[in-house]
Length: 428
Image 1 (tube, rainbow, N blue to C red):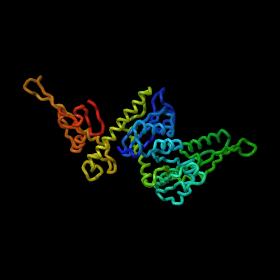
Image 2: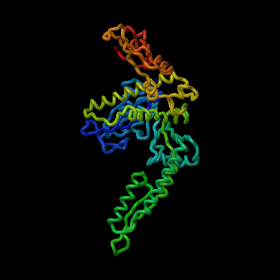
Image 3: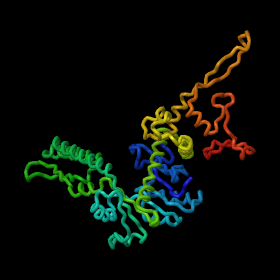
Image 4: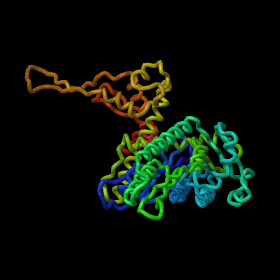
């Protein structure tokens, strides 16, 4: 396991029912803000192996979990030197100091909006709008900003053209829909009607995260009759600023110059491994919703899911070692179990292959007496690729279920420990 990078991210999962001991309402990644939830933190190594997990109360913010996680890595796991990689919601000056106090380096995402340093860097970034990766240092900051950052600070500005186009198209489509909605909305009338119109337009803007693009204001028309007008002002400066941010993300770090900007960006993008793990836990292991109420059972529920994730990751690691040609589109193995040539070989796809294996009981008469019968078991045909995997996992006599066994590690035979060549041991 490669601990040179420590990847950390959090997610949430919700409860069905009430009175969960550590369940609280908070920011829901599942878009279920109406339900109590817990927050789950997952720590993974550079090669995508889960190191540990944390369970927090449902109203904990990302940035408040970092100190606890870093302390745990140092004290419980004894990881002496590493680069801590975290997402945008975790960056604070206090968290950076905590990470550095434990002699770790850091690579953290920056919030794109409402940060003075981003606004400053953006002026330099847009001078080369199509440049995929740009680096800035302490010297590139204004005198005022330099007071808040150490000399070693580095900022990496990254640009993804495809994401930029998709984001811009979505925003333009939403703006067109809003303008169409305005055309169908009464903007002049009595106060009650105008308030309804205001609520209708504001609801759309909130739903599409466009409140900064338009300003709504109700004004009285004239001095006489009770006639009101709903004025809608388009904030062109805000839209232009948002266009400059399309497809861009910013990274802050203090790693040495030996790590170039491309490697820093790659390290930050490794957080996708944690996001993929969360998707697996939610959509394949069905960690949500949570039905238990007591804290110990809630933590146990998450722990079982974590162990299942760990098992899945280790088996897939073995798959990559055994099936080195799994990405070759011309191989029979790929054609049979892969949906597309780019889809990785996973435990779930393998399970489909294993599911085709059946155990069939046969009753054989030993003589003419019906009561004297012998039952033997045979399996259906096991494909060569499945045999290859079973052999790699130490499973022997798969075709003969009565003699089915696992290979024992000779060095541990005296301790009667079963080793599945996955780094996981089970005492029997």
